[in-house]
Image (tube, rainbow, N blue to C red; front, side, top):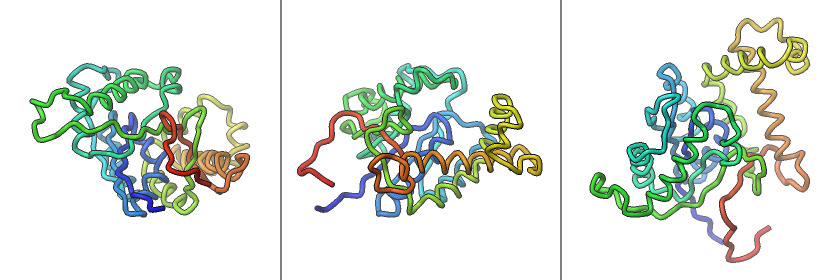
Length: 251
């Protein structure tokens, strides 16, 4: 059975999401497909790092220039997303999990989720055609929600796990931020149970690197090797929207 290499579009609220599903994006490129990412929120000092990570993954990335705390699903915001969807013409869109987004206290996630779903729907209709006459409506793609609380499928990223990890290493601002978050949340003694050599690490960046190495390996092993019945070592979890449409049952 011939498998078509799809065009993937990630609608990301933050740059780290590109790496969180980076195994899937990179594997798609390696198999001959195209992978794109549109990042809603990014600080100027982080953009070069996100671009470097995207280059490692083989992803074409663009920045949508929304402002922290001011994301709204208004008509002008929807047009920005619709333009991207109609230009890229994705077969698959990956975005955040709606269930998680509405309980997450990260800024703007709830509004962003509404914006994404509205834009995906409007991209297939006659919305704002007069303002983008060179871009035709695009049918609603297959949607996968990344890092869901209740996944219904996983992707084997064992062959590209090291590529994904290399891309994450480029996000230095994010890695240092992770350190600040966990130093506030956990005691030093608790952190040492994760990173035994914590006291010898010279900076927040190096602590963040060590934390992410441990967390990322544990997360992907949990959804891969440690999952009941899994055939994979490292896996990224997803929840596909809607039912699976199959010509035949597949193993």
